[in-house]
Image (cartoon, rainbow, N blue to C red; front, side, top):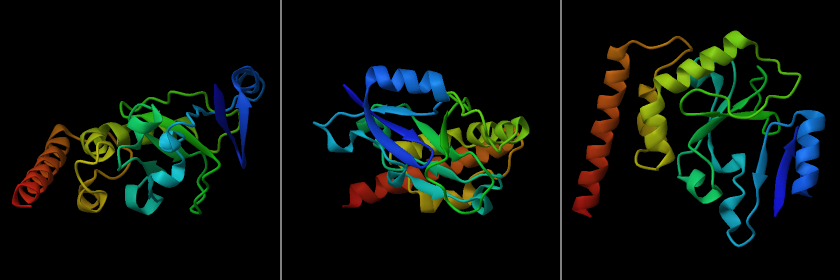
Length: 182
């Protein structure tokens, strides 16, 4: 099986043994299996929606799956985040966090984000987990839920999370009603 490997500004198609060696040598942060029978299986960041820092209140740019691509690419539900503070989008300097707020891949040795900022990201993901799960399954629209996402990197209150959940459920009901009318 071949693997698509992302290395800062370049991507390479390599064999498994070479992928393992590069991970050990360079601490690379993502190796994606490529299935050529399913062209959409190599999930590229271009298939995810970008949330810039101003939208999230976080010190890094994010990418969220809002089309269910995780299913076709064989990944878990997750977000991608930029490993620096640059306001300019950089698709080549990314890592991955699951929707429990856990970084599931080894970070490169040099990361501009400090532990406090990574904790803020983890809080943001956990605060917005319900909405992110619905987005990943394409059950709600990002444009509809975006104004209601909990901003910033502090752990939200249960009341704030409940309000977000209610808004998500309201959007789900609207979608279901629209489908029934059509």
